[in-house]
Amino acid sequence: MSLKDTLKADVVTHMKNGNKTALTTVRNVLGEIETREKSGKTPVELDDLQVTALLQKEAAKRRDTAAIYAAAGEDGRAAAEISEADIIEAYLPQALTREDAEAIVDEVVAGLKADGHELTVRSMGTVMKSVTPRIAGRFDGKAVSEIVRARLAQVQR
View: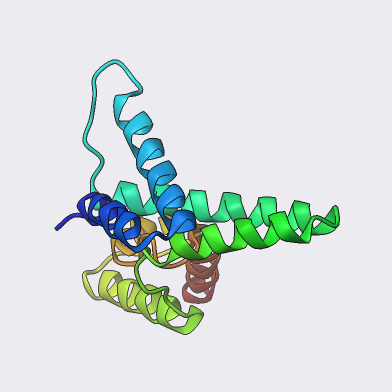
């Protein structure tokens, strides 16, 4: 069952349970998915990886909005945004720790070295190409690129 199918099934569940916040949040996310699928010249079907990326953006958007509301003294609105972010994050895969991400990067670097690749800082794209599918959606992409850059700098020495 795809992530999108899970979201659709949960709409019915939230409706039956009378959970209005979760119902509204999941409906909004499904609407955003539908908008993304229909925008562009030809309609597309988002896969689980793309839906996960969209869910991460939606959760981050709500957390940012909550911070703005909290700074403005609107604690009720901030709490509502945080609860929506929590609902969305429940659909995301289990996040990796920094140590887990570093272990994956180290494994990929070691594998590439074993295959005879000469690794320098310029090999960033090659390493990221192998790391991204294994980490995607479970750890911050910017932090992963910083880890890769640091590992490649160590290898070069």
